[in-house]
Amino acid sequence: DQFRAVAEASGFRVFNGVVSDASGGVSGISRISIAQASGGTAEIAADTLAMSGGWNPSVGLSSHQRGRPTWRDDIAAFVPGDCPPGMTVSGAANGDFS
Image (tube, rainbow, N blue to C red; front, side):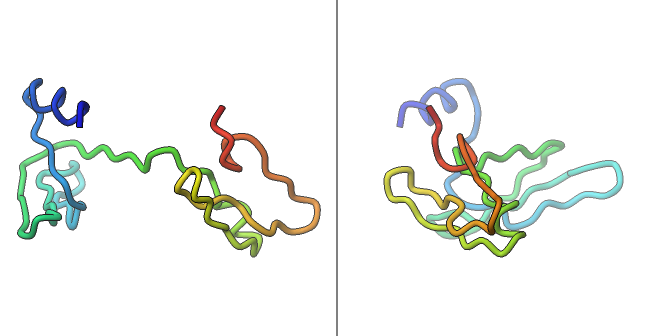
């Protein structure tokens, strides 16, 4: 993947997995544990943790109003489904990223 190659060429370590723990205290994060997809755990000292969920529509507001999200294969994400009367979702919140 070209982005992984650029990151690694720039000196960034790239992990394939999920953050399983972030340790620290009132002064902030000091250590991050990563459960790797290949198995095992990576422990790294860190003072910052940044994450991206990718391009995901906002389903929170409609879900809080008892709307049920629906899956769209074309964007590989959930979008607001049945919204309560009077609610309309449009644009990126409804999966239109153009």
